Length: 544
Ligand SMILES: O=P(O)(O)OC[C@H]1O[C@H](O)[C@H](O)[C@@H](O)[C@@H]1O
Image 1 (cartoon, rainbow, N blue to C red):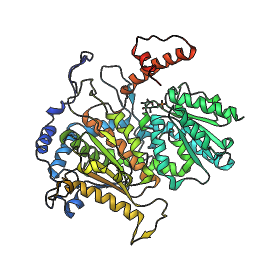
Image 2: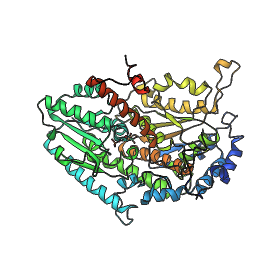
Image 3: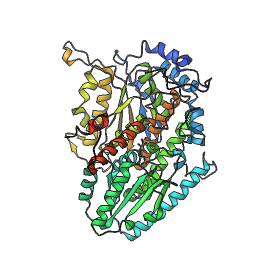
Image 4: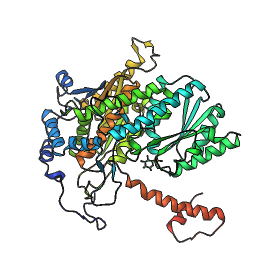
């Protein structure tokens, strides 16, 4: 990681944060990390440890007896949280201070208020933290509720195609797929995100009746190439089928964006510049689609679960009881002090099939950063590489490396006592759900304690850190809480690293170059000559 760059001049002296290495807690944690807790030692994992090393909030329980920490490590991590002022920063975020910025450099300069989108429940003896933002969302929510009632009454639409990408696709799609047990009868949602024309083609071919289909175009900026292209493609398809797009197309966009053109749409919903794409699932980006597919009440329960987790994140100052902060600190321990580069998130729930994909954007776009909030290159590791697939499928694929590979992969397992549909059978004395959960618990323990034998081929070193997140059942409330747990984990980690978790400059360069390639394709399409001497043209000419 570079620590200096000719292109990066510090314009402003004096930092409010001590540098990472000067933090007393960092010094202490580095000392502990020389000889961290050995999970593979005899009796290292005991019933007492399992009972003590756990925390609960909003129907979720975090078990961390299988992490390489003891009480002294957790104390030192707790001090790190204090020294890096994570609660001050979380409060600034929830109160609506402008925290999405890099001091003295051109940056987004925005508030970060996804929590205000669900701060809509308390009977107002306690005012919402950012009242103006919550009030604006209340207006959108009541518009959405009325629209849902109208759709329920008129029964005109059975299918909805959501067109969007990145934050306008991943989070909402992950939530919809996660709640199939709560789907409304005779309602289906489809997703088109990739600019690959086969994505839209496959969805359009699968629609049973286009005349009963809504299209929800979702883009905060209203200018994303993939989304605009797919909107045009789908509009064109409707026209070809003799249908008027104006009677089918709705949109979600930022106020004042190029897409904010109500005359073009049946209805327009709004999100705001202080809602980051990857934090937007509980804004109108998720709202209309989820309320259409699952019903408005279920959407409200997602918001309620998320809001309750927001309260845990800001209100619970004891790190041993604050789920997002505890998860964040355990992650920082594994990343910065034990030196692990990746994190596998492994849901033992088929419903969470796209949840890890959403977390990839949430975490890696937020914390894949190399400068701190004052524009200095950091000399410590920031966000890990996130990956994973649902278990037990993953067990039959990549778990070999997790158990015996030369890289240690910290894991976060997620599981539920009950299935969503309850369609289960007792085979050989246990249900399928119990078989699923036995596998989850077995993997966690096997990674941690290992198994030493005289045959090296059958040796498991163990000492591979992991934790387990458990809930009773993946219902809308629990899913909202799980979503917010990860949103705040990511934010807390950004606060600990003192980076800006809310911009995404790293995705710009590729977009600029893609536009330059498009210019070349345009010339090729018009039969104009393209220069043979530049890299871009040379690459285009490589396409078979
Ligand atoms: O919602 P949109 O403005 O269309 O943006 C969609 C996505 O595109 C960008 O490339 C960003 O990296 C994402 O953070 C964003 O969610």
